[in-house]
Picture 1: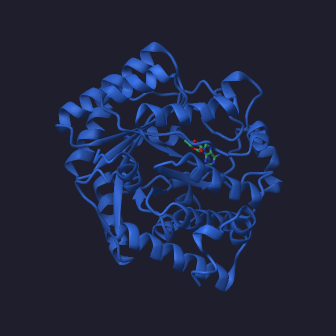
Picture 2: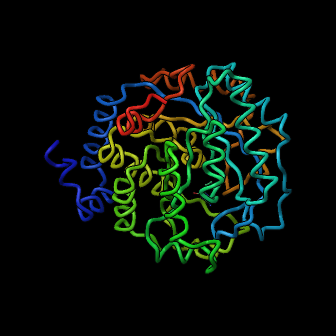
Picture 3: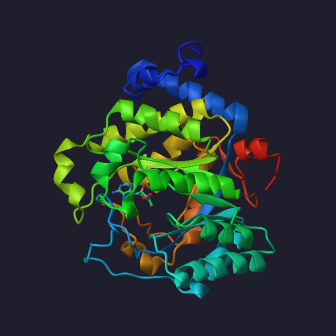
Length: 360
Ligand code: 5AD
């Protein structure tokens, strides 16, 4: 079996074939990726409390529900206090880190606001909480400023590594340039962040070969973390018109799981998140991803009343449980699949530790 899915043999063609696999071939892939994960990372799952800071966005990506041109939603920005309360909650509950995600903005007030959050988060937790930012493309100077204030990780999805496909998914202007996005990922690496990226899976016009290239791209960029998940159509976006091209949801889910499995085999020591979009298709989608290779979960800890306005795609899961009950529920679900939560641990990427020799 290992001969079949040897890391060295995973050429673009082989990856594309495995992305199409079904039945016993797919089972073998999942067994292999699960054992790679076990060997490198054991059965610990790290938590990142997800804070959806703001749905105000300067960008106009054709797939995204919070795109600038969408007038059908109520725009918000959490107050500084609301963010710090959420961080305090995460810290008290033993989440090793939080991920602060926002629509993309470049105003000095926005940049200052993030900076203050990062500083105050360090202060109120005595430096015990890891901070991941996911606030889009910024200048190198801004990345450096936030890093120096204490943000140690940054997540910037490349969305797709195919320039051709990227152009079909974004307006043709400098703000949405493919080259600029790649440069931003490189700037994050250079600044010293644990750098994460990722893609959407099952996009219209996307082939298995494109996805194979995405996997190789992530290896090439030597990323430390990855968040990727199925594309889910949203009625208030231009890409909705292409929905007839999409795979059925269940196929998008299984394709996403094969992506996670292959990435785990290609990059055994990175952090891979079981993303919310998986859960939007199947309520156990995230657990399935954990079983076959993911090692990070991002429970939403945004104040409940804002959650329905951070609506990137249809069927976004909104839990009826409060955050504390949700944590107990997740804990039990993970135990049921032989995993346990790494409470009070930042859960830095092993790849990053090896690359830099640093614990942090
Ligand atoms: N379906 C799935 N993921 C989406 N994102 C944005 N819109 C969609 C969608 N319709 C993802 C993008 C972005 C992240 C915040 O959410 O990958 O980087």
